[in-house]
Amino acid sequence: MKEDKKATTGSSLEKRKSVAEGGEDGYQNRSSRTLYTVDKDILHLAELTEQVGYYGYGLENYHDLKDLLEAERQKKPTAILMHTAFLSKEPANLALIQEVRKAAGPAVPLLFMTETDNFEERLATVRAGGKAYFTKPVDVGALIEVLDEHSFQEALANEPYHVIIVDDSPLQATFASAHLRKIGVETLILHDPSVILQAMNDFSPDLIILDMYMPAASGIEVAGVIRQIEAFVSIPIVFLSSETDRDVQLEALSLGGDDFLTKPIKPEHLISAVLSRAERYRRLRSLMIRDSLTRLYNNSAMQERLNQETLRSSRQGYCFSYAILDIDHFKSVNDTYGHAAGDRVLKNLANLLRQRLRRSDVIGRIGGEEFAVIFPDTPPAAAGKVMTELLSRFAAIQHRTGSQTFTATFSCGVASYPEFSTAADISNAADQSLYEAKRRGRNQVVLAES
Image (tube, rainbow, N blue to C red; front, side):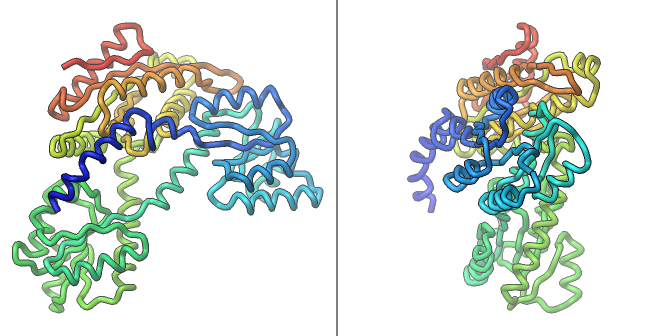
């Protein structure tokens, strides 16, 4: 198995380099999202096209519902934004909107915009299946937030659960794995419990299935080792054993287990136990590790991910980069436009990062107006290039508060592994580079030098 892994390293590294430089599955391919609009206000559409473009969305406008429906059948958009004028009570229009919704399916949200804000129009949009309602001129930050929330929930729903199965019996482990894989669960089988901690760092499980009796260590002992690690304290552990003594089962649960399943177990019982606990764990963990305003990883989660990435890159011989960015003169934004406007700026930057970076990049809010990004398998020059592009896009975004609009900028520092060898050194170097960017006049990216 080691030789096989070694044989694939070369091609894997080439693909990682391609991604880091914006090639296949990289940053350049993140701009394929399209927003279909149905409106006749050319001036508003021109401004909307420019602003959504900074977040990586293209905009295609259609003047009537028939053209929209035809385009939708050719290629589904990311979302549809329609003027409420098309919500007339004419049977033909209502029928067309129903066809538009049917062709779109649940993955494509239907949104509405109008010049006025009243209950009757809002009610009509809800009855038509609308997911959001905007008054003109559309607050692009609020629009992107709705789109981002929808895609975030879609991604959560589509992300398969990860389960580690620790069992010295290949037959039992394969049985459990096969039935879980049938329903889309990704599994990792370990016959040697001594590698569990490294496997958990690499595989990020949502649940662990432990055999009670193994030659190297008992399931209770392995659970005890897992519970010693703060990051793994809340991961559900399900014991799977032929043990029928209820006292032994209760002891196992009291020492770190969440459930005890007795062999032989029916597949449907195994699936039910795994899915219910994995789903609950994901929901609780999301609340624990994400910032409530931006839904990005919080500071403690980012520190954990930075430590994990440093260890992974050290073992596998890859480089990675770490960026810290800070919104310039953020106190002035709050003082001038109010804290609600400041929150909007924070959300807009979070959405820009989420929309324009790769899915493999790890994004967090680590302070009041401070954010961080981990770029796996990415040299500092490539990370700096990406952050410079994001910097220019963010500077052009119009933030709206009431009838006022304003712009904001950020400064950024980038450090990398192996130029800096520990997570603390990488973080400190990126932080010092950020302050150097501020010293040089802000609105720029500075790369750390070892």
